[in-house]
Length: 244
Image (cartoon, rainbow, N blue to C red):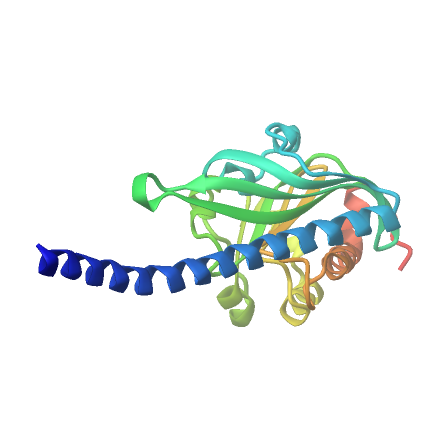
């Protein structure tokens, strides 16, 4: 009986030696995740305060449904927005209504179920009736193609076609927008993972932490430059005179 108790005690001691360090590491990981999340929240609150915008933590289950039909918001199930910033903001040389948020959704099922987050910036443009249009990095979320249900468009630039996939309900619009000047801009200026247009809204998205070099400010600057690179003949056809 004494030998049996000793054996059990030894097993428990070995178990404790294995589990306690694991729990310690797990605790540190959870602490780091929570700290990064808190820092990100404070960064977004500070941005909203500087620009006189409104911040709310959410979740909002209906916000993305009030926007035009974007492939981004068709991903997964149980979609909702968090870390939401709204208001009017100068982007490029235009003052535009903006919605900034994190789209959180679930993918898979059972043991394969995961919660994913894609951050987005949506702005209301001064033009209405834009066709459904999307540019994505070639390896970003292949499911977006099936969500949109339109074949990719090929361009004469092999480098552009290798790096980006383009779909549009109006191919003429896609060719007009993605002229050589715009393609050069896209290739040279670290675009977001996803750019979508529909009706009178532009939306960009990516897996952004809003820290380091990939800040919210840098993405807004990119969006402004993207809008400023729209070809003049396209702007005229949409009813806006260019001041370039």
